[in-house]
Length: 395
Image (cartoon, rainbow, N blue to C red; front, side, top):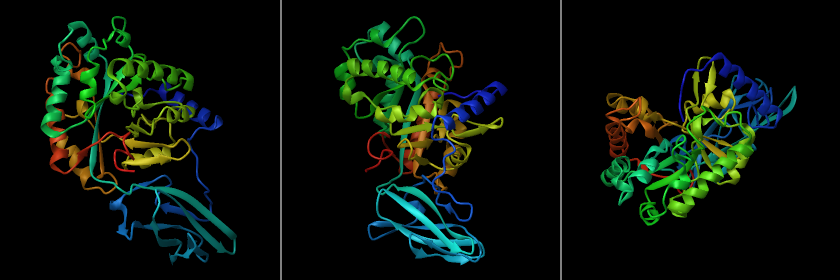
């Protein structure tokens, strides 16, 4: 996943794709039982809620529900009368299942109306972090060409191994099928398969894209194109590294796919997709084309469930190659103080910045990773893989 300045052409194409997503029945701009006369404002439809969002009681989580309705209406929330204050209503409910539907109903001079939303309870949540590295291909080419005795004779993997030994860190490396004209995954030998499997408890491989270029390869591509490339990479991971090393992808190159591709990804085992959900130059970007309302919500929250596809979207908290060492801790600290962003740290970087031959090589890239991982470790965050359990926690 990358970031660059958004041009007017990008903006117009994004708008066009948004319209296409609506026409094709994509997941954008959907509401769930909304009514003009009553609206649940909190929690948000698709919210992923944990112990920080309520009070744990009797094997449940008590949460607040509030919204607005006509001044004189009688309002109930899941059948229980709500408190009123002007046009506002307030209530509490207890979540006891992983998914709960919340119904606010009003009855008054304008008739009966209701608004339904669904939320997810992250029941077994704990502070956790995952570390994902994008754009991987150079290290695979290097190992193939140098014919090392061990995977970890490659300095890049050695850095990750040392971080694992030091902090217990876990990494998912999102890989390409090809590195330009001189290397394809089919060339990578299977003689390291045992070593991959021995280290699969902390080091995984996942699909990212067919190649680094063109930019935004799946932003307007068909689901068939995306899945064809997905399967090519997965076949090679299984061949040379084994099933234990495979991880379903959580980041598609550039963080943009057509909405009708989400269902196809879900069928291939994808349960989480991470993005930036950032607003720049008048457009929401690196957001998998979800609508602006949910993109804005995700810019301030750890995660959001898209019930239409079954995929949870996760907000990337820090991109190490974009964050100088002295800015790592000041970037992470405010998140830990925000109940909506404190539970999960989604940490991220790109492989190419490790390599001295790369035009934008960052000499202290390894130190940036060490600083971020040390901070989350010292603050009680445990390393996880998002595909194991719910967002890396127990189901």
